[in-house]
Image (cartoon, rainbow, N blue to C red; front, side, top):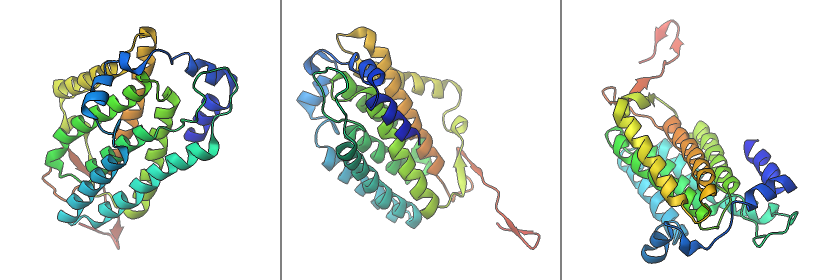
Amino acid sequence: MGFLALYGASNQTVFGQTAENSLLGGYQDQTLIYVLYHYLDFPPFAHGEETAVVGVAIAALIAVRRRRWRDMATVVVAAPVAIYATHVFKNVAGRPRLVISRDVDPSFPSGHFAVAAVVTVALLIVVPSVWLKWCAPLLLGWTAMIGAGVQSMGWHRPSDVVGSALLVAAVFLVVGSLLSKSIKRVVVGQLWPGLVGLTIALVIVALAVASAWKPKTWAVPYLAISALIATALIGWVALRLCRTTDPTSVGTRSVEQPAVSGIPLS
């Protein structure tokens, strides 16, 4: 519902289109993130399909190696559905030309951000708990960079990025509720306590701001904030779907099991 409401407000109203079009402007080679895109083919700015295939394949292999069959099923079902859904909606829904703009192509939701979001969630729900504290900051920082970068280079608007996050989140939560089964839940405060967590958060914010940087500097906070909101949503979904069967794992807590005939299930 949030995805559809955001699409309606940003793409189907004069106010929404005018507000978001005001954030466009300049050339993509005037942005900081352009260096990574142009000279390094930074994924998924470039090679988006390959990035999705490789990322999901690695996640599936990790799940198989750990014998996490439900998580593997969640990844191989939700990932392609989420990515395909972004392309279908973009082509079917479109963007009517309600205001004069140099960019009238449909772009809601962002396919580039969807790839980063899908790979991030897929990997975070299958990696061992001891890896999570290292993998999550790297993957979420990368996701924030992509979300801010596609906006600063003029490929997408803020609603495209947030809408993509909402769609990926919806698909993974629905599929995960059907195929996966949580045993333990991640506790963020135990994974990244105190100053460590604050430092990681500040680094991710800095990456988003740097990736959003463009000559129209007054627009940078809006681009960075929308990328951070989308990234936070993706991170929340990933941690919702994380689970572990190791009772000694750090950063998790038990979820109470139902009892049968008064006898608790272990």
